[in-house]
Image (cartoon, rainbow, N blue to C red; front, side):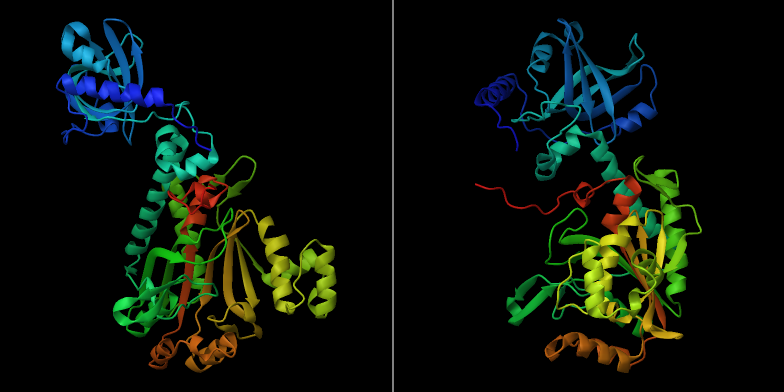
Length: 480
């Protein structure tokens, strides 16, 4: 829980604000033209160079007739030096009225202290924004996990590690976009509100479009719209945006998450496999500077080539070579003995998938393409020609988490209709007739892939929880 701020602290800050106002300093100032961000000023440091810098006051060391303080912006920290004899008595007295957390602008000249610290000697300063509440008490780390998520702004102020994670997240997304654009993929945007949710099996968020007097759904995936674009002549297309699934919160799940979906006409699962391996390796080298990622306790080696193994082989390794010859009852008993809870209503494929997800997937630390999944699990993919009980897909697992499924996409509208109808059961309204009509106009064979951006960032940065890589994750309401 967040520690309450005492009334005395708030009252003192208000008194300082009023005192500064009386001295001619507006507590919430105007724009301040800077020579550059603090990192730019440090990088171009020259002794005696005049500069204009701005940032948040984070430390202050009073020497009597002089004062050292630290400014910080999003890029760097820089020391500033205020001298009473140089600033004048009134300006110096006002400077000493500042509180940690205040934003100030400074005009001055660069110099190096006796200890080698790059510093700005202040000629003039302005108050840009008064902080009425203090920063976290321990500047070197905001430790309360719940407070870090609920008050992310304080986490970013206090924790350099968090700032680095989100800087890397931005860099990862930028590199993915640039990589795909260099390969002539075209970025598009498709509806976030849809009249019919599709592209995945998930519970949607429901809303209402008053102007059309109709129920709408926040999308669970953009897949069916992107495939319409394949019908329309796009041959290399991607969308990087949000999906919404009205399901649980966990270490690896957030109901609002970022996904990239990629489709290439005349390609297949193998084309997607080559693309994701090369792209992730490129991004890791550019952003992380290494192919050895993860943590010391759970290292991940991204060096290609990545392992490829059929789904059934992994299940047999864990549950025995006779697993797929067992009937439903024996599967259930064996799964239960292995510590996996089984719903009596499940069929063999669902039992097997539960065993895989609970016992096997989490053991796949280095990148692994799990291939030839049961057809029942993937209704939008082509069946393998040599065995129609499995589909021509992969699930890329890294660090024990599914990062990306990739498909040889089904482009047979007759077979697609059968699968939609089997999935919908008695609820025929769930069959997306508009999408089927598009397919009937001729969808080219294609490879398709979705990459969970949040999980990829977790993997590359070594974060254990999805909340650590989402700036404002969904949280349970506070009690009381």
